[in-house]
Length: 177
Image 1 (tube, rainbow, N blue to C red):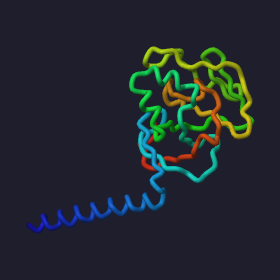
Image 2: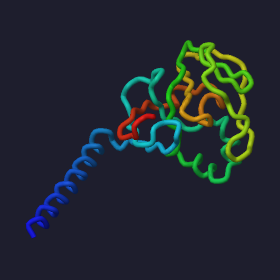
Image 3: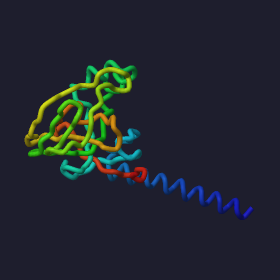
Image 4: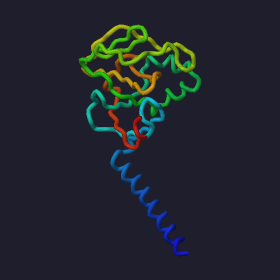
């Protein structure tokens, strides 16, 4: 019976610890948490950061309007896109002064091919295409993930406005591979 008292006490301490952690997170980050289930970043929780958006950092943003027609054509995605709480978490790969190019399916940053665009999405519908090169202006960024070949990133929609993005950082995520 003595073990039962210890088990109840242990459960109480664990419950109190979880409640305290939840309260601390709420107070500290104001619930600016996003859960990433996409394989383009490690799965887990990301918290809003007060750091400036920079190459190598992470940002959360709404899918750019150029993707709206594609998303509307994919069953189940239109409702997801319509919810303002939904967006993408992606690594920042290029910033003002960098040059991004899309030549056919090749996507390059500053003259180095970093990825290949896919012509069709998982639904079989053609993905948006942009072409040419452009030097990013102040206030523009490009996002790119090399973790998976079909990441929804700048290889399909080009640059995005930095003002449309919010810096995030990992909080509780799976170990990187």
